Amino acid sequence: MDFTERGKKACLRIGRWLVAAAMALPLLETNCVAEELRKKVLVIGVDGTRLDALKVARTPNLDALKAGGCFSDRAITHPVTHSAACWSSFFTGVWGDKHLVNDPGNSFAGNQFGRYPNFLRRLEIANSNLNTVAYTRWADLRNVLGGVDAVTNFSSDAAIATATCSLLAQGDPDVFYTILLDVDSAGHSYGWGASVSNYVRAIETADGRLGQIVSALTNRVTFAQEDWLMVVLSDHGMHDGSMENSRMTFHLVWGRSAARGTIWPSPSIVDASATVLTHMGVAIDPAWNLDARVEGLPLPPPRYGTNLIFNGDAEFSSGTDNYGASTNNAGLLKVTPNRGIAWWFDPGAVTLARYGAHPEFPDVSSPGPGSRGTNFFLGGLGTTNVVSQTIDLSALAADIDDPGVEYVLSGWLGGRGGQAAAAAFAARFLDADGEPLGTNGLGPVSAGDRGSVTGLQERSCTGSLPVGTRLVEFVLTAQAPTTTNDASADNLSFVLIPRAHPPFSILALARTNGTWQVEFETQTSRLYSLQRSLTFDGWENVGTAILGDGSRQTLVDVNPPAGQAFYRICTGRFSHRKAH
Image 1 (cartoon, rainbow, N blue to C red):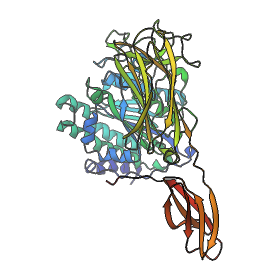
Image 2 (image 1 turned 135 degrees about the vertical axis):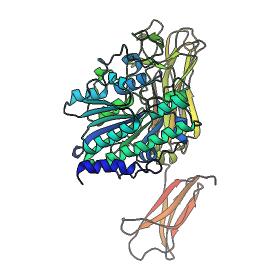
Image 3 (image 1 turned 90 degrees about the vertical axis):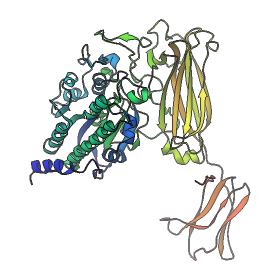
Image 4 (image 1 turned 180 degrees about the horizontal axis):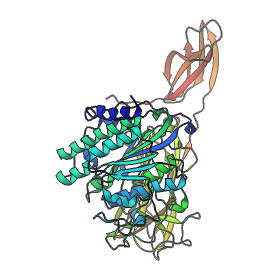
C-alpha cells in the first residue's frame, strides 16, 4: 500500500479496540545522536480533566505513555480556571498579570499577545521553514494563535482525532498542537468528579482517541529518523472549585528526549512553552520575560557542594510591585496576578516581589543578604500561604544509605517593621514512596528578632539525611495575622556534603591449613563479606558474611585455588528491615 493508505488504515484499525486495550509503543532509543534525528513536537490537550476522575478512569494509553516518559499530577494552572486564561498561559509561557487574559467569561479582550506571543510564533520567528500547526475545538482560541502556519477548528472530538491521525500519517508537521474537548463538555453537562459516570466515561473515550493519535504518530514511516517530544496535559480541572479540583492538573512528557518517572520539581501550565522551545533548539531570550522553565527533560544529577534548590534566590523570573490585587486593563475582573513561581509548587498567594518596588517592601539598603539580586519571596495576600518544592536525590541513594550524607539548610527570613508576619522554611525528608523520614527547619524570624526593622535575617541548620531518603520537600510558609502578608524570604539553600567512609584496616593475611584468611578491624552494624577473583573479570562471594561488632574478626576462604587469586572485602551498612 502507499503511504496515504497506510496512514488511513492505521487510524481505522486501532479505533475498534483502543478504549479497552493499550497501544503497543515502540521501544525508544534514548542514546541516539541528536543531530541524526529531526526534532518534532506533538502537544495534545485534554481540556477540563479533573484529577480525581482521571485516577479512577481506565486509561491504558495514558498509562503506557507514563511508563515510557515522565508524569506529574501536581501541575499548577492559572488561578482563573477557565480556558481562555489557562490556554493563554500555556501558549505564551507567562502568567495572567502579563498576558492579561484573566476573564472567567473567556474573553481575550485586552490581551498582550503582541508582547507575549505564543511559542509557535516564536518558533516561526526563529525558523520560518518550520511547519507549525494548531487544531482547535474552540474557534476563539485563534486569538492566541497568531503567526501559526495553519489553524483549523473542528466541530467534534471524533473529527479532530481523525484529522490529527491523518496529518501525522500523511503530512509533515514540525510542531503540532491538537485538543480534545469532550471531557470538559461532559463536565458542563453532567458535572465533574470521580463519582460522575458520564464524566469518567468521557475521560476513557479521550484516552481511546489518545491511543489512536499516538499510534498514527509511531507508525509514521519516518518515525525512526525523528525525535518526537509529546506533551499531554489539561488546562484545568473543574471551573472555580478547590485547589485540588480546579488548579491542579496533569502533565505528561514522552519521547526519546524525555526524562523518566515523576516530574520533580512539579511543573506549571506555563512551563510547556519553554519545554517545546528548548526541544526544538530555540534558546530562550531573557528579554522575552517568560515565567516558564523547562519541564520533563532530564535534569543534571544532584551534585555535592552546590545549592540544590531550584530558584532559591527568587531570580528566575520577574517580580511584582504589589501584594497581589490589581485589575486587568480591560477592567473585567479583580484578580490575584499570582504569576506562579518557577520550579515551586505554588498553589496560593506567595509571590515574587522586587526589592524597593513598594513603600512597605525591604529595599537594597534593608538588612538582608549581600548578594540579594532583584527579587525576594513575599507572602502576598492571605494569613497562611505556602509554596513547596520537591527534589529527587535517588541518584545519591548509595551514599545516603552508606556511609551517609550531611546537609546544610539555610535561608534569609524576615518581614516588615513591627508587623507580626513571619516566614518559616523547612526540609522534609521522604522515602521513594513519599513517606516522611524526618524534618528540619528554620525560623520564623519574628519582629522582635528583627528589632521591628524591615528586612531579613539569615538562619541555618545542619544534619544528616535519614537513611532511605530519596526525595526532599522544601516548604516555605508565610504567616500573618492580617490579609496583607509581609513575610519575606530570600536565598534559600540546601547543600549536601558527602560523609567519608569509616576507616578500614586489614591486620593480617595468611594461608593456614589449606585455607586463606584475612583478619581486620570491624565497625559496629556493618556487614562484611569476602570475594575472590581469578582474572578481575568477575567476583564471587566465598565463605559466610559476618556482622561487625567493633572487634577483630576473620573471613576465610576454605577452598582457595591452587594458583593465583585476588581477594577483596566488601562492606556495607546492615539494616534491620521489617517483614511485611
